[in-house]
Image 1 (cartoon, helix red, strand yellow):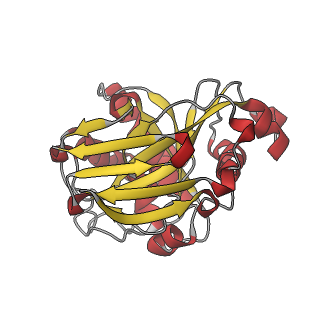
Image 2 (cartoon, one colour):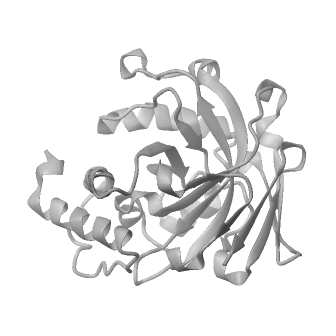
Amino acid sequence: MKANDPSLKKLAQYISGCHMNVQLISYADWEDLLKNKDDAYAVQSLVLDMMKAGGFGQSVGWKVGCTSKMTQEMSGTDEPFFGQMHKKTSFKGSQVISRRNFFAPIIEPEIAFLIGEDLIPENGPFRESDILAAIDCIMPAVEIVDCRFESGWPLAILPTIADNGVHGAFIRGNEIKEWEKVVRSKISVRVEANGEFISDGIGSNALGDPLNSVLWLANNCVKHGKHIKKGDIISAGNIANMAIHGPSADHFKIDFAELGCIELTFS
């Protein structure tokens, strides 16, 4: 079992320690260890367990990454990946966040889903109708991804997965209970940095429809011994048209039109 591989455990200990001590990850001595995505997900699982044991906090749900052509090209992959989001770094509403907690943050406007029932693996493979039936509400959201590797962006897919999908923080907006009326693929977003337009985007940038990210997650996390549970929040992938680098400004306004607005300030 890969999770019992001593070398992978040692790498996970190193990555989790860098997380909890806010240190850069030097990957040069480790990159030959990760042979494939199974190795990378095994390290990710160990990292999450170690961080939880270290008091970093429990999971509040999932992030799905590389759901757009732009982000897949950045990571050199042709499919999404998943990670988990921590209670300690998850917030609701506009936020002021310390820049000291990040190294190379990227701001990602996303659509998030609150799941209202367990998606039990034995009921899979899941279909779109199963996902629709399980959704409680949707929310505009922002994920901050952060490259903690000394090499910086762009980052290849295997270290990305191993480092929990380079997840940094999650901010969710208002819950949209009447979400069935929303045309998810046409959700628009406009991002301003220090009062100036920097990017826009549309829901279809996330696998054509953010719901497809949830469907992909439901059918793929089970391959690694996990499943989506009632109460999980799933952030479904970047819908912006370009990478929005955090150091470029102190204040960001992420406007999802009729779904609401989230403001983010780095202090």
